[in-house]
Length: 59
Length: 377
Image (cartoon, rainbow over all chains, first blue to last red; front, side):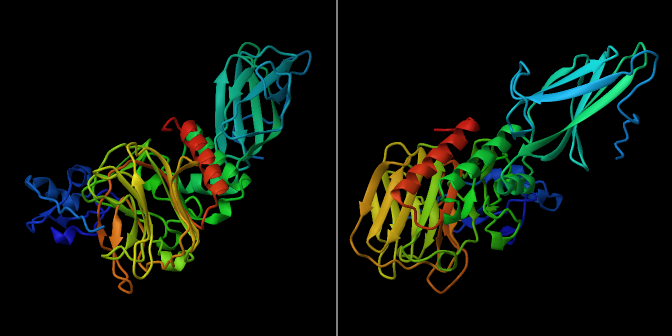
């Protein structure tokens, strides 16, 4: 998943895989369904997971 | 001239009077006020008048010396035309024909379509073809110049055109390069006619604008036109700074608990102007004019907060983001997006410090722009 970072998924926008607080990598539905690059259609086979986003409070 | 329309001159066949055609362009539908130019998006009224024959078909087009734009083809000699930015200076042609007698004639008149050259460059780069969007861009540039604030911007992102491609261009320098501060979108943002909607999870746009390089300490501004009213976590809607908020140039418009803030930090502090906000829609401008003059305003004149205490300002050496906070230590240039925002973005700018009058004028221009596009809040 981390290898997707910086790869264009629709000719303009870049994948931005990030980790949740449990260390699980994820991308958004918008990236999955917006992907038009056939080399990366495999992201459509990724499974949904429950993610726990970090809650930043220091700033 | 080689137009390829198969007519050699302003005369036709048949006996009797030589068929001829005259053409006029007017600013009114009654054809009383002749004009030789108009602005993009402003309708002109064309009248072709035949002599010596009775045409039953008229073809109208605009020719700029290399490209032809068809205005229309119809049975009558009166037609209206709202020019776009694809063609600027050229001639309007009318070709009239009578299918019964076979008579034909044509005429042309020089005509200019006015558009600001900076607006034209952006429109062409971003592929904006909608006449209303073209008009909105032209009016925006014209107004910013009329207010003498155009030169104060390093980057202007109008978010017009509805796609990631059209949204990425900087109106001040519409080249498709990082050095021109062209945006690079990452994560799951969506694009539409109302602007760019980040998802609040992993979407942001990199401006490639490094404050310490592009801006001057204690003389800069940020602006964000938000179409979303939501109290969202601890997000930042644009900015950069270090882990502790030092060296920061940021804005957040409404967090959980209704906090709102504008940071202009230095080596030891975020230097935050903060308040509460219950409606995070509108144009927000944070401006620092000197080390003892900072203001944070909404919709031109509403003062969210001001600060006249003397505090130094030091800018970060990593790029500023839209819809996120680039959390980087000073001296470790790079990209570490965090605090993702979720407010729909319909305009943003980065540039020199703006005076209170400048901020008011910017709002007037931006709100007119949004109104023309039908997306004002």
